[in-house]
Image (cartoon, rainbow over all chains, first blue to last red; front, top):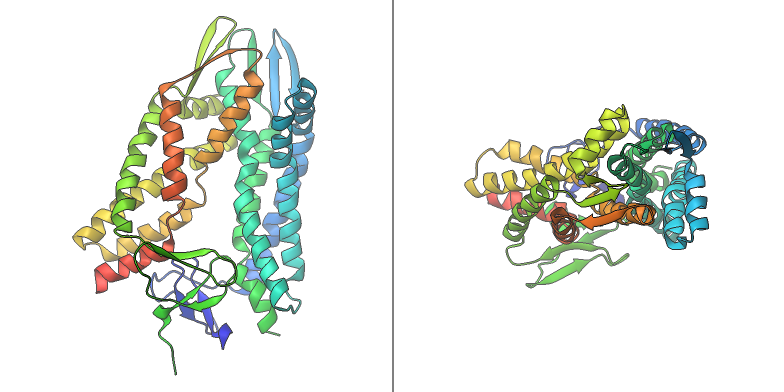
Length: 198
Length: 206
């Protein structure tokens, strides 16, 4: 009985579930994508995001040109520099936002994608929905590092000292973008459907 | 017997199906499973939202017109505004970073505020029903790409990095930006799609 209903993502109104494509009765937007399409695109986005994450960590995110001497920082080097300077809280924030949160998001999405088919009982299903919700909230906070680099690059360009963004910044911003897309293309309702359709 | 679909609601967080109840004034309905706020009955919530989106639009324009911080390094002054920051990213050929920053800091917030205002006017005048429908859908999607609050936190982090090397002054826009973030967190990010659609169907159909 419970699973005859599906909610629209755009307007959150309740619709009756049918086979095939459903268009929301209130806002007329399409509600369902076929299950395999949604999963495939989630996988594709996730793999792309992971590749960009690796690139973002290898290449410098920040390039400093001080009196002609060029030095560059990767994300981790940046965190280490902050730590050595004694700005522990900021170092921790940057570490969590740029290194830990993306990894956490990857693992959560992987977990959901791998497990979605398995039958599950009420409490575990709830946990998954909650996990998904947490990833949606913390995801955008990875952008902190990109914003910081953009601000520094925007402000520090006097004659002798010049800060510019590095290749890592481009990779990082694409990583955030694709992780968000991946999370969006996982339909949270698939988690639920996995149980009922078996 | 077939229950009326309008009387049901599915929690956006835990997907639990539950029945909608008529709320007394100033009360909120919460999910029985996860305590997420499902919908509220605030007097004039739509009009208040409209007023606040005009407020935030004004704050947003101020925040983008004047320097947020000015930085003095080795005798030279540099001012930070969101447009100048994006311009310098493009100038250094960082098109991808520049474009994504442009979307999350300028286009997405503007879309949310402008669509809310336009939707408000259309609904009040009861015109352009189908355009309004598309605009509300657009608003709901734009909402999740807007990151001004994260940007504001990033300014603080950047200040810590600059601290030893430069003299820093806060500009007029810093105040506007903080006020914008407050309105943004409490009003714009708090827009419940379900309330908008209830209002939409009530005004056009009932």
